Every structure is written in C-alpha cells, then in structure tokens.
Image (cartoon, rainbow, N blue to C red; front, side):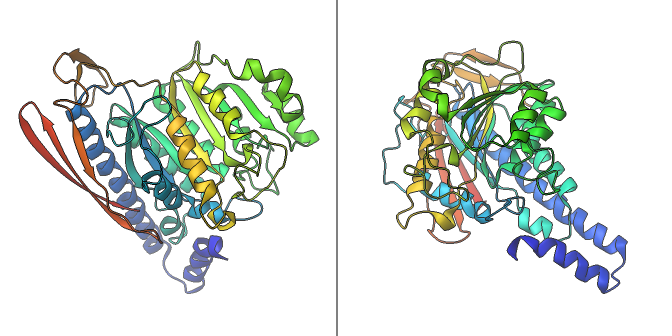
Length: 399
C-alpha cells in the first residue's frame, strides 16, 4: 500500500478533474526543488573537500529510498537512514582495516537523499523518476572530487545510476555485481524497471562493457540466456571454491571509463546478513566479499549498496552494520595525498602543491548529531583550519 501512494494520488487528482496543467506545474516545482537540494548539498560538500585539500576522490553518500520495484517486500525503501545510523553510531572504530579514517571529510561525505516518495506523491511515473535519479547522480559528479556511493533502495536504482555515470564520463564502465540473483530479466512480471531487470536495461543501453556477476545462486533459464545474450560473466556459488583465486585478484576497467560496483546485500549468506527481502542460503561470507573488494585492481568511479531490508533485520541491527562495514571497504582508489589539490572550479582539472599535510593544517573536526528513529535532521558543524584561516561550515542534511 505504501508503495502505491504516488499512483493512487494521481488517480485521485484525475478523478477530481484537476487540470493537467496544474498537476504538471506542481510536479515540475517538486522535481526542481528536489534537484536543487541535491545540487546545493553536493556543492557544499565539494567546497569542504577542496578546501581541505589532498583528496584524489571522496566517497559521497546519496540515498535513493525506493522500494516499489521490488517483486516481494518493499522494505529496502527504509534502508538509507538505517545504514547512516550504523555508519555514525560510534559502536565501531572509525578507522578501516586499510587505515582510512572515516571521520576525515575528505574520505566520506553525504549529500542526503533523493526524496523518492515525495516525488511519487505528485504522480510522477517511473520513466521520469529514473531520469531524476540519474540527474541527481550527475549533480554529485559535477563536484570534483566527489564520487557517488548510492544507498538503496531496491536494485532497480542501479540502472539510472550506472546510466548517469556512463553518460557523465562519456563512455561505458565495467561493472562488478555481487548478488544472489543476476537481475537480468527482460521485464520481470511485466515491469521493465523491476529490481530483477536492472542489468538488462544497463546492458541494452550500452552503459557497461563488461559485467561480472559474483555470488549467483538463484538463476533461471532466462537468467542464463540473457547472460549469454549480453556476454555476462556469471560466477555461481556452486563453483566459487574453484573460482576464488580469480575473483580475489580481479583487474577491471582497462579501456573503459572506470569500474562500477553494485553490491546487493543478499550476495552474503543470510547467516551474515539476515535483513534482506529474498533470503538465499549458501552465499558468500563477509570475509569473501572483503577479500574481493580489498584486492580489486580498478579505478572505482561509483558504487551502490542495495536491497537491505530493515524490516527483516535483527533487533540489534546486524545487517545494517554489515552494510555500513561494506561501505567502508568499497574503495575509490583515493588515498589522501601529501600535497593540497588546487581545483579549477567547474573544470574538473587540478594541480598539486605542497601545502597541506594530512593530520596537520588540513585537520577537520566534526560534530555529528542525530536521532535513531525516522527521518532526522543532522547538523554538521565543521571547523576547518586551512592556510591560517578558519572556515566554518554548517551543513543541514534532512535525512
């Protein structure tokens, strides 16, 4: 019922004989406001990272709370705030296994959510919604050195995100897809935007050159036929022990614009991540996934983490924490350099100087405040010491 609100509302407007022009103008205002909010958040975070200097690339979280294209349960729409809670709850060390400090804003920023339900409440259909998601991703990519890591949401969001990345970079990417399912149906249950059809749309559009699917253990004859049609490299769990060495030493991205990682939480065995809509035993261990990501040789330009369903998680939020830890591991090959990066605004170009040493003049402090329930506002106050000056950023993110 929740997922049908937008369509239902449009039917009510039409039934009440509301003029089409009035509906269209209202939709345009909501869409414009939504994109403006993403744009301004991305600009603010880009300014912060550039002022601090030294970031070759900065992971920037973008939530897409969409669940209505799920063929079963629609709980993934509630995932982005739960994942954020797990990231910033303080229950684990903020330093990753590879030594990244997540409290350093050059490593991880956040531009908030695309307001999916608010947009659908205005009667916007999925064709336009997919375009809005693509436009939002492009707005994040406008701000060097931000690289989007999208929080789903169901797996249907991967299509508009990969499309945006490919179009923005001017060519196809290689995709590493970790999942229990290939999600490559032509149109599952008649829905071309189904979470089970996202990679068919990606391959049809030419947005990916090479698609590697790892962790597959629930695949139909159509899934295999579609895989052959598009030249997909499908690695099923029944042969994982044989393929392990190859998968833990992947080298992707040669001859294309970069690599995109799509991580469906149900790639993991439910013993490690029970909070998913489609439970498929016999999956990857958490360490299996870490090894694949740690050893990946690639220029990762964007990523998504999808299909976490908080409504099926354990009371202590085990799967939310797993999702948060995986986000820490998805690396954009972006070490913090010893020199400050000087950016030419809007050009995407940079040159290095030797002014800021991480942990010295480029040090930043974050005051994070948040609530554990519902949609909460978070006020981030960052006092940045840079070139003997102090810049104070007050960033309001409506989670």
